[in-house]
Length: 394
Ligand SMILES: Cc1ncc(COP(=O)(O)O)c(C=O)c1O
Image 1 (cartoon, rainbow, N blue to C red):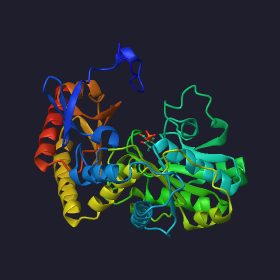
Image 2: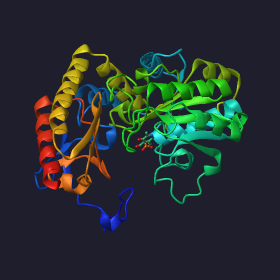
Image 3: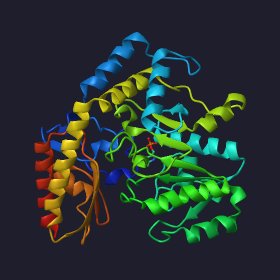
């Protein structure tokens, strides 16, 4: 028995994962075995496991100013906040910092309820928004368990494939009383609930409903932000302009816990005179901001973007080969993220791990999200390993 808990499992069912160190895109286990990190750890190690431009920036910050008051202002805080709003590329707006994705969601929900004065948040069933009680209340998957969450404040809307023209959704709004609905929260492209990629018609229709009934649109980009799906943010692939955006994971490359909420300019103006009743001790932590500085700098480098594109092409070509397998029924890819559906149950996480692959699988689905800094050769060899694994189980 260890002196610490493993997350999301009965403790005795966990698989031995004795890691000695990490390198680039791999875990090196205590017996020397190498395991390819096919999902960038928990979808946060997008820049790999020791990316110099981010790590050195953090070390420099640790030496210069490792702690800051939540109320203080300093050049780095203003500079990265401006550059992050530039990357989001909407109407200006402002950033509220947190230390996790769940807290980004919590604060977005608080802000939406305060601004509108309405209690209800509409959300999808096939969703995950974080493990704290507010974020779990809008989460629809199994993790919204028996935790006394505020589910009476959540309105479940149909999935996009069940209501592509939002006829049922609008009726649901009207039955609930649109004047009760503060916001709709959505993962732009969902993560661990199957990489569902909504149609433009649906997501833009949701925005139209929000505008018609005066609700806010919150997009959860915790997993898909910062280049994962081929654009800076996944919502850039749609004609939508959310009011709030939740971010975390790759915001710091996972090198330090950090999260953020972007709010629109209109919301920012509201808080000029109203009290923003949100805050935390480690608000805008300077080492987190230094990591974000490194992330933004890397994403703005043409060479870095080119190597991401090359890896995306490599992933696409290799997925096309995988698609030839009888067992593979569908492959979805957006940028450096992919979902593979099989006609039988997917290899378990444990089985893949034994074969040297760290991936996410659920029912008949496998998710892949390799680190951006992987070499095409290493990615190709990992896909070959995966092909073997799928073929063996067919
Ligand atoms: C889409 C999405 N939102 C929110 C979260 C919660 O983030 P965190 O685990 O940092 O609290 C996650 C975590 O996996 C996520 O995938």
